[in-house]
Image (cartoon, rainbow over all chains, first blue to last red; front, top):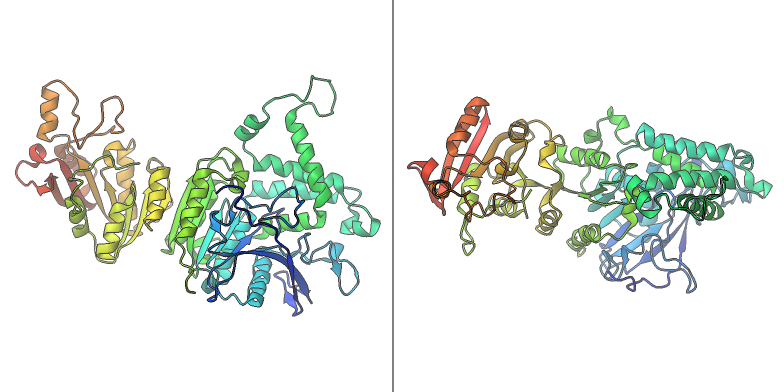
Length: 377
Length: 205
């Protein structure tokens, strides 16, 4: 699993869909585009495809680099590549930017072909179900009838779960990591604070800030800072920063502690590259997802038709998507006598742990993925 | 929770305790193995009886071995109970040579009876004569079955066959069957003295 086993240079591709697409809200997108990347080779039987679903701030660029000079590789580069747990010598891996995103797929910041202006506030609210349905269209386009596996962490795990519910016959294995069958009130509360930070920013202009040649930087920055606090555990922040000072105490509101420096850096970086309207929609998709709702809150009934084999993974210090929430998914699968294994990985890094190359965690994924038979559908 | 006892000769593929458990488990039934170790028993039951098996294992290395064995395995601590499992959702729940290492002994047995229609409990018999001999000579027993020193043993609730019989009586648990084995042979004569491993098939009264 050495870092030099890289995919190398990859080029994103764009798929255009001109058939009207009805969203869960009832709104219809007359057309849309999805940007995606692929790694490895699709075999003749088209039976080795794996879809990687991204979380809140992720995108289609899962692994490798888009150009030689790129500073960073894709967001899950430690997982995907030749000889890595999601081995591209075996699997054909697909990363896709979700609908409503800001990295090339149709979203609030992309140009509405009808008006020739950014969609802005007019871009509809999209849900996890909509993402899965749009991803299904992409697979249709690629001629992939069934996925050898679907994998995702956090919001990505919700998409993996939703795939097994909406398209049970199209998923052989689902890897649901650091996820939940819905958000708790506390979890949604963090999203609400993040959204309020953005919406009340004077530069927000009801979501049509593009027309004013500005962005709600302050709001997006605060939203991201808040997010980062919740992705780390108290212990991880303690180990990383503790009460370390940047310099000597100045009795001011400038950066005094290392932790503040980190949060400001992360906030600034994010506000410079992510779209606020997309952030609003991603958090709403998280809030709305609740597959058990139409079954009177009974997740076991919601998962009654799933056929996939499951690997569910949680991390002990993750309090935003706690192990308890993963156990709910496991219980619902057990109630339906489905094939499921569940690992509760001892980790310091809180929710962020799902993106880190912890040896035991990667060994779990590696062993599970190695056993998947990709020879036939 | 690791199985810390290996009662059979390691050169033998055949394990008498596995064979007895297999005799108590129905073909194609649904089985939960608590403290399943590397999943060896579940693999045996799957291959011989086509059971639908799930294991529960706390230890990372054992959990991974289960995954490699193709066993469904849930990582959790048995001391927390079996809250992730519905009442009467398994034909058989097994606790193989782990009871003696449990802190919440009564709780786990009650939980097993809640989740399983029948349960199988096996444990090393502390009343075995070799253990008694070591006690008489003034030392805590150390043997192939109880391979730990007093200061590093995970075994916190060792008991004899007589003790466990009384436990079942006190807790209104029916003993459907009991077998006692020593080095692979069944012991029907003076089992509490001559038996090394006690095996019980139980259900609620």
